[in-house]
Image (cartoon, rainbow, N blue to C red):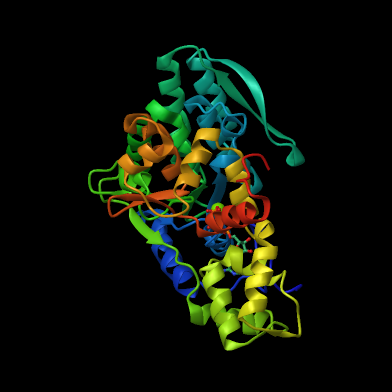
Length: 399
Ligand SMILES: Nc1ncnc2c1ncn2[C@@H]1O[C@H](COP(=O)(O)OP(=O)(O)OP(=O)(O)O)[C@@H](O)[C@H]1O
Ligand SMILES: [Mg+2]
């Protein structure tokens, strides 16, 4: 199935990338106003695997000629990776990514200005390697007081506009794309102040457009905290939700890119309902199907169940990171959605003790609150658990 991309590809070639013409046209039009001193701030939402990251990388390609476009994925920051999420760590990462991109683009990276800033503030410095392939390392401060952290924040968040001011003759503006933005939830108590501060800088910069994105379901609290009317951006942020492929789009996609798959009409219906039109699942599942033979409903169901741990691999990874109690909670929801009191009763715990776990699982988009009840929001995870249970007689606590 060589024509379909792998489910974990982050950058697709033009031959691999399908559709999304409307989304690309909307986004590029909005971003063009950056060149008229009117840079937009955009939130791109959408469920896991729907294609936000590949779309944003395409946007980068489209806009790259006249703009400096910095794409950064917060989940690749050291501070997150090492399970040690901090404001300082995020600032370092942000600053590093901006400098790296400015460097790649051949812009003036303000080295003199930066050194002067550190010197006047008497910061102790260490070197941070930004892009080893290009041999770029930058000085970052060692922060000792709260006040210094504020100064550093100020410096870091103002940097994009500063770089633009110094390079106006080369670019029409800056576009900063922050993917996996939802990892800032791990800032815990600092989350609110981070968002409000960030908003302050973002909205005052007329030549820097911001796109925030990440796995956020439509009910995610973070979305209202960012883009809701009483959220940090107070309705100033444009929200664009990326939807799964429709049935017709999926049909066209497979016809064009995977014509060796011969679905009967029931078989295709079943394929669509198994994948819910999510490109990640479409590609991963389609690659597992036998070619040049009739695929009826039964064949599709069998292939799905046989390959479910591969298709749902990213969810199983997520599952593995959960605590025993969080796993219990999900398992308790397999049979049917439950009210909180009933859930507590089923687990034999006090209702109040569930708060943290419910929040965390909702943040991960594994469960959601719907009509007064909690339910599993990842059908694939649910199906995988059911299959494991039916095959092994026990739920897979340790995989
Ligand atoms: N427009 C597209 N054309 C073809 N395949 C696509 C398209 N969009 C997404 N895919 C497929 O889905 C996979 C997942 O896409 P992507 O990583 O962009 O999802 P995401 O929305 O960023 O997910 P997450 O929330 O987990 O970060 C891609 O690797 C690719 O295989
Ligand atoms: Mg992504």
